[in-house]
Image 1 (cartoon, helix red, strand yellow):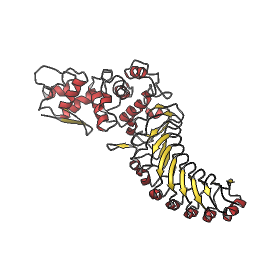
Image 2: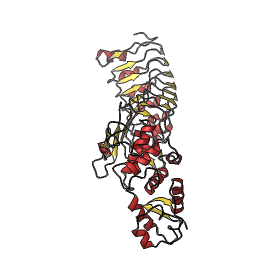
Image 3: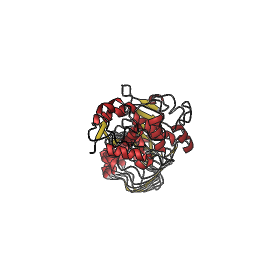
Image 4: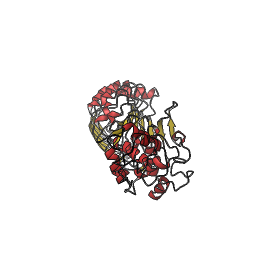
Length: 429
């Protein structure tokens, strides 16, 4: 008979699966055939001998198995991966899609996720309960931390061979400071949950890739890993009902990220700020971006992005700053951008846009910075731009405009509203 048990209502493992996991993790199951009563099982400490296929007979109640796991789940020192606690945590991680099962096998001696699992299960001085929400958060941060050091150092630290005063990363992470809210760059909520709200590691020499395990920080509002040496792609923001659904600000600018943008931005629908500039990102803007109706600032300047701007950008009704400069965007400028009346900065320079500037842009009444220089724009400059009474910058040089510079722009300039007015190629004053 296959029994399933849970801890705090979360299904973990079937008995048969637990026994199989024990064999895989090096636990020697008992070979005796004596039946163990329910009273004995509830009163004796759980060991590798009592957790056998004979012990967990059809008469064993799930609640009794749960009771025994509670008795051992806070023990430490089983750094060879043979402790039932580590098996339970491993199951929690894989069921939530935080890490691949193959990365958590003890045979994978070079695996950063396994080192993090071993630390949070057997070495971490906090010794959190299985149902503590900070358990998986500490695991995710341990993966990020161990990715900053050598595998030898991660292996030694996760096995307890280094002093707890020795931090492997970020000036104090994973030391005797058991509260992650005291770790450098972390801000937690003020309530009893002490969940992580902000992770700010700007200019902290962060290396490697962004671990997908960070999705365990499901209450995170600010993720700032800017000005570092991060490589690889931006991982999916959401997977198996866990991800950055509370995120409002994402700062990954000034790194070495490449590849396409995640296709699942729509799941992080509270995003207000996205800063991805100065990387090596490729591909087109994903459709999920256009479902972010709270988005205020979108910056992907100086990447390798391409494609045309779709008309559904008009759905970004709260957008205040759109910075696309120094990419390979092309096609016509959408007239529908004129509905984004909260825009204060429209930066389109150094791309391959063509055609005319839509006269509708004269309705962008809050616009202060308009840069469309170094494109393939042509035709005449709309006189409606003279309606932009808050305009401070107008860069339109290095295009193929014809005709005269609208006199309305001269009126704005004489009023002192411009920092600069560049007389564009092909136009006379």
